[in-house]
Picture (spheres, rainbow, N blue to C red):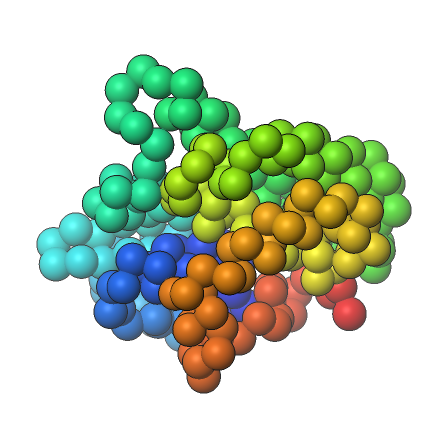
Length: 208
């Protein structure tokens, strides 16, 4: 995402949580990315990207899965109930992320798309609240890479529609729990952390 946190933010949060030092390369205008994209040796020229030595990855979910495995932020390996829940939650949040971005950047869209809010966002919040009712985290009792995706999507919704999120205390408690993680608190209080804008200037629905 150029000019905002975008899909790269869950990756940043996970790396901070894992205590990994990294260079956070951000692009504030398309020209900067255009000058870099073919020089980095990426197989697919998309943002965000992750480079560690000779490993060069794009596609945010692929990066999150890799980092989750690398830093043991995954449900128990093998065919396991928690692993299945992890994979299901990942796909659900990926769908919600894609749908939200489509609405935000629709050139024919509304400044505040009520049909999306009442038809998709609010019903999904209710489902997430129900899913979390007996869980600390989205895969059960421990943090997984999915929680970094979940936090970011739910935080987007909280920034854009705080009144909708406030209807679901379980979701609010989950966000509070995530923000109480020591690594997140340290990052949040640092000069590196910038909660806004969530997206670049082309977003039709700004949330402000």
